[in-house]
Amino acid sequence: MYPVPVPEFWRGEEFVSLKTISSFDELATIGVRVISRLPEPVVEVCGPITTGGRGSLKENLHVFEHVTMRLGEDGYHVFNLLNFQPTIDRLAREWAVNNQGYCWPILNIFFRQVFDAKKINFGYFIPGWESSVGARWEREALKVLGVVLREVPEEMIPRRLQEES
Image (cartoon, rainbow, N blue to C red; front, side, top):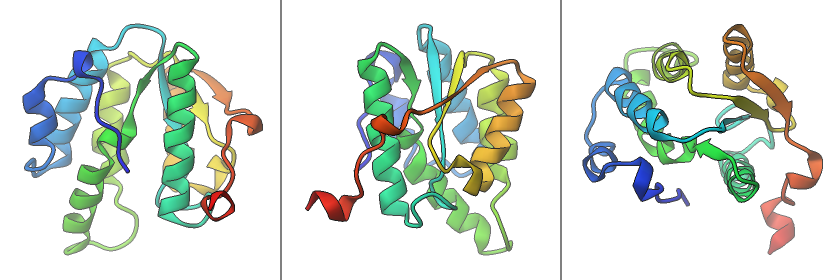
């Protein structure tokens, strides 16, 4: 389900280490390294994954993957969040053992450090982003950094998975 990273922007040990890192700070360090290697224009795809959107993680990831692929085909260099998602999911589950509610370290540590690298030129927001805690946070953070915000056109959004079967 998750794409393999583009080799020229990742170092092998970075991708392998995603399975063993133990904190959002460590994950952010890798994210900053990877985004720093991306040539411009760099795009961040923003939208629902775990909250909001189509109401299921599987459907939301399907949309994310499709939009990421299409923007890449259009010549953008996408900071591909899907490469980080399995590690984010694992760290969030570990965080939830001793905490309740939304896992804010995803945003306040990982995304904050990646955004503060100031490599993102465009934030593309998937329709329904307003229903996502994380996407709302991302929009405000990117706006403060002066990143150009765009809406993903409806025609770029795939049909629902059950309609494709």
